[in-house]
Length: 399
Image (cartoon, helix red, strand yellow):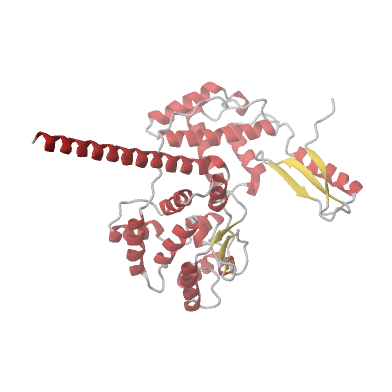
């Protein structure tokens, strides 16, 4: 039986219509459909490259012998490599180790659906939330799905294990008054070695950027003339540390004129040789020392750019007398604001940098629910006022 091609060749007409450009189409190790331009129009050369790429992929799909679950985890993460973030690898590894703690370090080929169901109940019995258990199950299923793709397993043994029902959470957002109070309170945190909190909050509410995106923003990402902010990954260079964007490779966001002025003022106050917009010079110097000592990781670039970030934000919430919420709720507030301004789901998905419509749709539904509630309240109020008016008129006639 002839083996199925893992890599196919795509001949695409060039933009000038005078030739072709060749692409290879394939599915990567995490199950995503990919395409790669070969950058030329030589069909023979393209076919040789396709065949070579096919051989390379098949190396990772040779059936292995018996593996314990711990060996299976180690092998899977090694094959996946840097196609997923370091922090994501850690989360996936922890989910599988939690599974192994419950069912034992058994042969990966002997795992059955009953093991997944037993694991689900064990997690719930020890007090884990349904949302946490659902997340673990998704991550564990992904391991076994990759095992099927790599011909290590015939089927995903826990594919049909249903996650526990997760109550629908209301999306937490700040009011306009909350944001105004936060910015006012944050302005009192201004000093040489502390983050410019008022500007950070302003950027977050006007762009919807994630905390990690804001803290890894460099001046080259700000197009003052074009009035845009570019969200770009960062390479490991002498001046910048490696950082990866969640879900998307790049996106552009509009820059408001008043925010542009604030950024311009900040740039004039900062020394010329400090590339990061929001990282204070003192903190940047400390990170550079860590980098030279080999103590800075990709995970640090996501989670540790600013020391005590959550504690500082909590202090600002207290000063502003705003109910305890998260910094990420500012991003949620910006996204719901875009919907209220009439932007489409596709537009919001693009601006927010969501990987799929499912995440964006949650915000749309939240706004739709809020609209219905406000409309219902308005109608009820109007009806109540009308009934009250008629009642008063009736009483006056009787009197």
